[in-house]
Image (cartoon, rainbow, N blue to C red):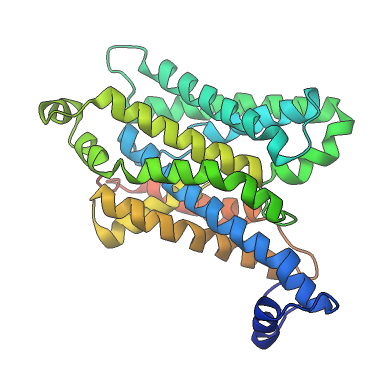
Length: 308
């Protein structure tokens, strides 16, 4: 219903259940807003789950795919695919997104693991921020030197779900469903990691395997979401903390809650972006950054971070 032109609930229902291709409002609902909403649902779910798995696997309350550099790593490889390989569609550059997400994950965790203390929460955040900054600089350098790729990249780079069609939704759905399924089965293992690696091993858990599966879930989720919508930040950070405040510290419940709340927050930010600067609109990635930055500052400034 909501956008540059407001459409009445009756017209929306008529478009959904009695589509008339000659009606302009029906075309807007079915061809523009429905696929945009569907993509917002799956991207929000992917980012919420990825943030939950990242926080659980690293035992870091400020971990999310953006802070750990995963989203920006995926974005860098998508930009490389567009610039160097001529990829121009989701099916063309989704594999670049997967590769970038995987390489960023391996680099951040490997570098943070150096030293006697291992991959502590602070080291992961610092290394992730450094990797994100480096990838962001490379993206800017490529965009400034490749004018042919600039128009393809510029709107995708800020993070948006506008202008995506059903083809994007169906292309991203299989890998997203696989990532969602993998994330949801890790609840019990993440509960074990929350007690510490030694306790988890004492309970018979294979800590290395759990973190590997968690990394695979993050790569699948972030790779698909970033390829479809660009690098959207802060959703993965905020959603697990909000869910944890309502359901407690059991990761089985947090994962299910994040699966629901992620789409709600992303679509709410998209609606804000549609209405705040009418008749134009702000991309959802800009809105999530504006909304999420104060949340992150408040989280860091708290004396005691939420228990994981």
